[in-house]
Structure formats: structure tokens, C-alpha cells
Image (cartoon, rainbow, N blue to C red; front, top):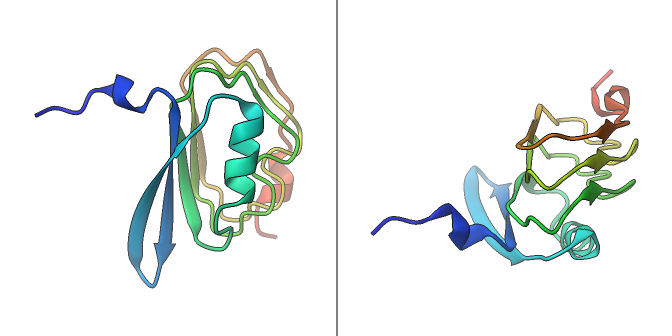
Length: 116
């Protein structure tokens, strides 16, 4: 049985790592507010990867991924058109942001993400 991409159309997959073990949690989301709340309520110290499939998200706001010390990777859906300046503030281990679509405005300050 194959898993089809559309199976994840209204969700985000959060990968947590604790004591060398990875756990994936599926979170149902439909818009920017629900994404912000889901990230805010996640275990911020063990969240290492976020993969978003929800096409209802068009903007990644100011503090959506702020202060996630272990976050390494974020994949955004093709519906995202804007990324605000502090969306990834204090994500010191962030290594990649995958953009699946044609983002029209990116004002991200990645300098605050890099370890000095």
C-alpha cells in the first residue's frame, strides 16, 4: 500500500529527538494561526524538523519558529508567499529551509540564527 502525498494535505509533521530517539507527530493545521499555536505548544527543546503540507498557509509570521534551539530543518508548502523577518529568530541550529513554491517576499534575518 502506497502513502500518497495528499494524505498529508492538512497537516504538519513535527520530528522530535530525545536521547537519540526520533518521534514523529502529525499535527492537523489549516492556517497560519493554527501553525503558530502548534509550534508554540510543541516541546521546544526537542523539536528538530518541521515539514508542512497544508496549502492554506500563505505567510510565515514574525515569531512562528522563534527560539527553537534544536530546530535543524523546515520544509514549507508551495502556498507560502511571504516569510517575515524574525520567523526563525534564535534558531541557532537551523541548517535548511526548503521552499516548495514561488515565495514572493522573504525578509528573514538568518544572521540571528547562526552560532557566533
